Image 1 (cartoon, helix red, strand yellow):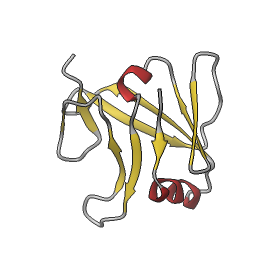
Image 2: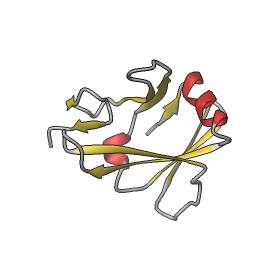
Image 3: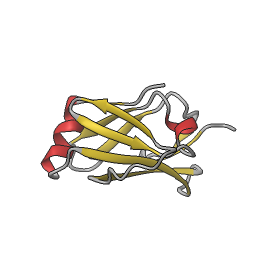
Image 4: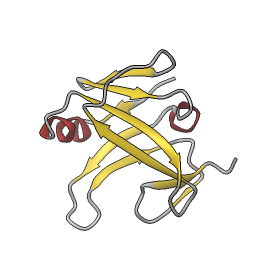
Length: 105
C-alpha cells in the first residue's frame, strides 16, 4: 500500500503552514466520490493509515484507503483549474474538475 505527494504538492502544503494532511473520500460530487483534503489534520485514530512522502505526513482513514491506495497527490498552480490533483489508479472515471471520481464498483 502506498500514497505519495509530489514536490509541488508538498510545497503547497508547506505554503499553508502544514506538515501533514488528512486525505479522505466522501460519497458526493458529480461522479460519486469526492476527495477531501485537510492541512494539519494529523490526529491519528487506531484504524488510520499513515504515510510519509516528501516531508509530509499523509493520514488516511480505513474506510477511504480502498479507494485511495496508490494515489499520488499533486498541485497545479493554473489560474483556472489549479489546486490539488489526484493521480488515482483506482479511479475509472471522473468529472472535469478532478475532485470527483468513480471506481466502477
